[in-house]
Image (cartoon, rainbow, N blue to C red):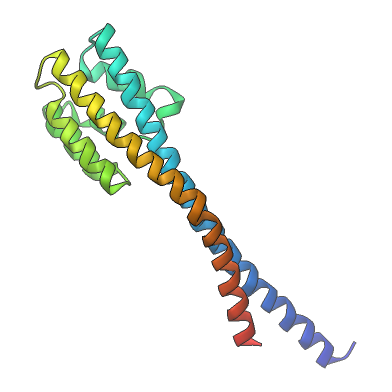
Length: 173
C-alpha cells in the first residue's frame, strides 16, 4: 500500500467517525426526551401511590416519603430522599421546597411540586388528597406532552444528528 492510499483510508475513517458522532449526538438527545417522559411517569405513579396511602392509612408524611422512595419505581425521584434528609433540620414544607428546587429536573413539574408542598401537612386529609389529585392531573398532562415530544422529536433528533454529521464530513472532505 502506498502512503497516498493509507492517507485516503485514514481520512475516510475520520469522516465516518464524524458522521457517527453526529448520529450519536442525535440519539443522545432522543434518549433525553425519553428519560424526561419516564421521569414524569414515575412522578405520576408516585403521586397516585401517595394519594392511596394517605386515603387509606394516613401515615406521617416523613414515613410515607421514605416508604415510597424505597420502591424501585421511584428511585429516579431524588427529591424524595433529599426531603427526608432535610426533615431533621427544618419543617416539612421547607424541606420539600428545598429538595424540589435542588433535584427536580423538569421546570413545569417543579412548579406543580412546589405548589403541592404548600398543601401537604398544612390541611386535613381531604385537602391533601384534593391537592395531590390536582397535581397528578397536571403531571399527567405534562407526561402526555413529553411522550408526544419524544415520539415526534426523537426521530427528528436522530435524523438531524446524522444529517449534520454528514454535512460536517462533506465540509471536511
